[in-house]
Length: 211
Image 1 (tube, rainbow, N blue to C red):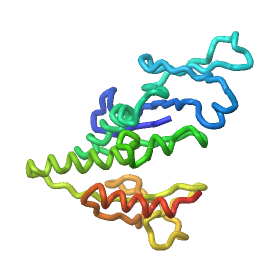
Image 2 (tube, one colour):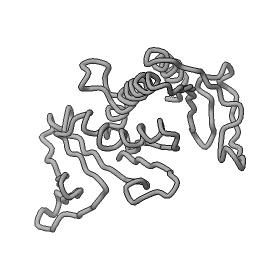
Image 3 (tube, rainbow, N blue to C red):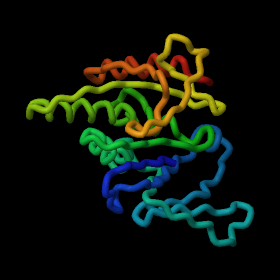
Image 4 (cartoon, rainbow, N blue to C red):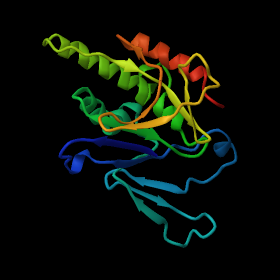
């Protein structure tokens, strides 16, 4: 599931937290073992129906979400439908959050990161990088200036680690400030000036993740 949310002043109905589900196709071992597909998506209505293979005569369980994407949906469609409005609002100065969750093998990494090549296989993160700096280039030509800082943290076993910090054994503290809200104390950040630089920051952080 991809959960996207944006916090805005005077938020309208289209600017609140939304829950979106992406259902992947059968692959690998599932196909070799001739397993049946029991999940059916109605993209237009935002519905997911799950059948019980042990009792096929029973009606499927039905769930409704803000958005549903089936196995034919492209990376670009996911980005434009789930992330692009939040990215564009963030450039305007609003706080936005996108996070992806699900059990192992459901396609979280594919949705968030994808592959560098071909271009149509890129996930939410690389598409976000391209959009942010593409929009900044266009807006700076209109005499607007931007400063982009990148941080990378991990929450694992209820502990917060700074994945860009020099000491990877150090645990970070959550703090709250009347002006900044909740923040991570002494979190490392780097000023980045383009897609290449922020990709380098991402690579460094990924090497320090817990696996």
